[in-house]
Length: 149
Image (cartoon, rainbow, N blue to C red; front, side, top):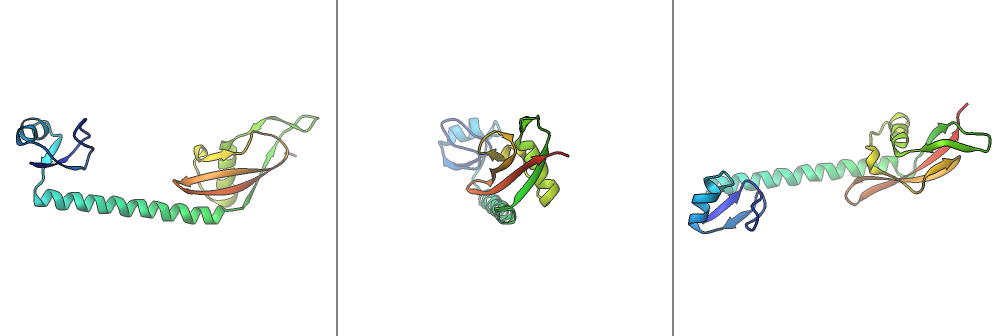
């Protein structure tokens, strides 16, 4: 009997998979516990529609990430920080501050966890940060750290 899994079932398959199992296992275990539904033509059509919708959503996310990457590629954001007499910063500039600068200066909202800094920013100068927008889509941004007045 063919069934479509509603949840991951160890040893059988993952959610959304169309699997062939014995009739007794399907009726007495999978369907009875709500782990699967029988693979009727209606259920198969619904499964295909869900897969197509998921694929479309992923493509839209990739397109949006590509557009965002193109708009911030090779741009420079300026961050001001306080420093001691030796020119060393009090603390360091973090990915959170870079994300805030991107939103404030370029109007692009990026999660701080998607920003990776080349090294710790503990002095004035220009640094490179990589913004990972989607799997395989990233952009480099320059971070210019200046002294706060």
